[in-house]
Structure formats: structure tokens, C-alpha cells
Length: 258
Image (cartoon, rainbow, N blue to C red; front, top):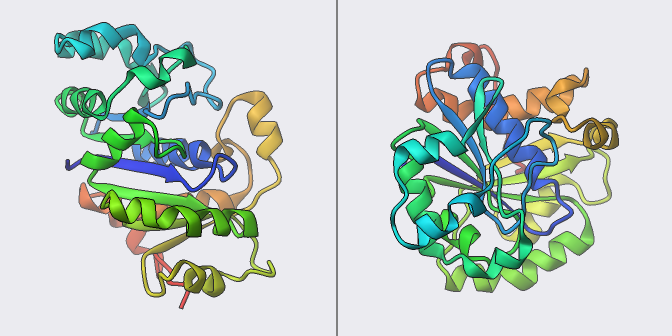
């Protein structure tokens, strides 16, 4: 579905929520006449970097299951935060198994009538109805990973599951990137068997714990490396909506590992 961009992590430790929300904030800032929604569809609330009081998908669970959700009700549940809107995931984690993939599809179909750009945090659990539904209809899928051996080994174990489900990432995001790591970028690409694919790097910064405490994304701290990397990540999306003027000033928006 055009206009829906899903971020999914290889593991819960890779920073999917931070990258996804930061990308949504960047798009809302760049695409000034577009309505941007950041939605958590992954079985968790996933509003760790938000101070605003948000509404959860749980508030419309019965109406979604019975296909009675209307756009005015959804609009009311999507809370305005700065230049974008927010929809929290499951607050009551007992409901996690109650959602089917078609529920996520139904929610996103309704949201697409209200918002121009929808950024979804699909967590890391492929055995979750909301996440699978979001992935199944997204326009682009961003797979978030890190340079850790445990993360790469986990991806190797899970890759066949994704292939059986016909889930193919469009963009690979190497988060918390260290230039001098013992696993350099080209090694990660070869290890994943994805040389020449679209890879984005988001550098490690030291304000992560502060951001968690203060409930803000890392875009709010004076570490230009992170902001520049998120800008590159969001650039192709912004360009799709005609916002390429700022990005054309930069050479090599996407830098292949190889």
C-alpha cells in the first residue's frame, strides 16, 4: 500500500522504535503539507520516546474486529504531537494474541484515508498479527539490525521464515553503527547475503540513555551524525512526495557497503 513505510527489527535490542519514530519526525518536518502518522503495530505500546498522552489501538479493538471503525473515530484516537500524529500499540499486552493480520490491514486502510505518510513500528516479533499485517501491505519495508554477532546469527536463523512468508526487506538499516567495529559494513552485507542492496547506516551516539529518560528521540540532541543519517534514510521517501531540494545538496544519499 503506497504511503506506508514499515520498520521491523531483527531483535528487540536493535533500536527499531528510535529509528522509526525519528524517521517519522524527520518526514513530518520536511513534508510540510503532508499529514504524517507514526503508528505502533507490534503488540507493545512503543511510545518510549513520547511525552504526550497517547491513545492505543486497544481503544478500538472491538470496532476493528467487527469492521465498524470509521475515519472520524480513528482521527480522534490519533493524537497530534508536534508536526505529526501518534497511535500507540497494545497497552494491555494480554491482547497481543487477539489481533490478527487482517486487523492491522483494516486499521491501515482506514488510516490511509486520513494520512499521507504512515510510518509503522512493527517491532521484532514475526509471530505477531499486527506486525505481519502491517508488513504485508507496506509500500517499503526497512529491516533494522546492528553489527553484533548475536543479531547477525539471529537473522541467519530467521531468514528462511521470512522467505517462506515472502517477506523481502527493501532497505537494510545498520543501526548504532561504528566505523571501526570488528564487523565492518561490507562484512555485514556479505554475512546477510545482500551485497549491493540498499543499506542505510545510522551512527551510534551517546545520548541514548538520556533520550530514554527524557522521552525524546535522538533528533533532539546536538549530535549531527544521527540527524544526518536519519535525513539520508528519509530522503527517498521525501523525494517521492516532491521534497528533494534539500537532499539534492547532499552527495550520495545512500551509500552501498560494497
